[in-house]
Length: 95
Image (cartoon, rainbow, N blue to C red; front, side):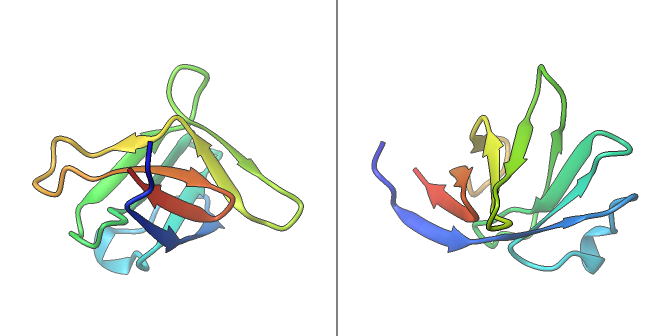
């Protein structure tokens, strides 16, 4: 797959997830306590994207440089933007 665009991202470990209007752009919020991560869609459309953290859903890694990678990719086909991105080493690669 060819990368169409790249967005640098950050992550914040939280106990409870913030409300959408309290979320920062390009930040993925991760709650290990509740097994969920959420963020505003990284395309900029503003929709809330929820990703359950589990063996059957999404998993994540944080490397020694504090960069987030998530697996599998994020496909927001239910939203008008239809964005699809792969989060690897602190970058969302739109495909």
